[in-house]
Image (cartoon, rainbow, N blue to C red; front, side, top):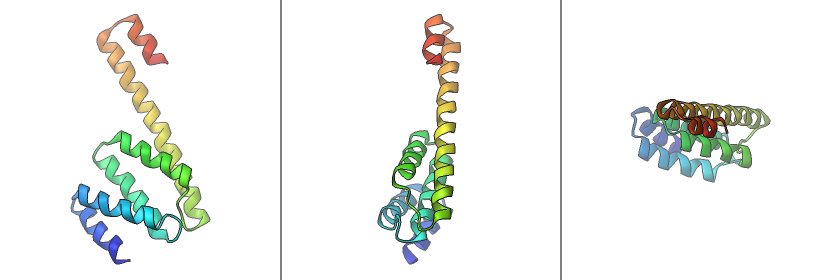
Length: 116
């Protein structure tokens, strides 16, 4: 698929905004119709990781678990596993950030809020 190859060129050269735009279109259009939709999702997740965009990684993981975009059972299983790992990792990262903030403020209320 030529559109995916073009998106990959932007991805490889770190042109994240254009790669993201093109990959998002591919993901939405080929969600369950072709394996390239699943490949685009993985690339979008990798862009979120490379740009340290936790919110986008969470959004993509939740989207994949809801839509289950894949062309095969194997891709569906892998997508669910990766999506779950991303969501769990994001929760831990947010918890660590909350406890770091509580440590900086050094107040009982800060620790109690972080524990929730």
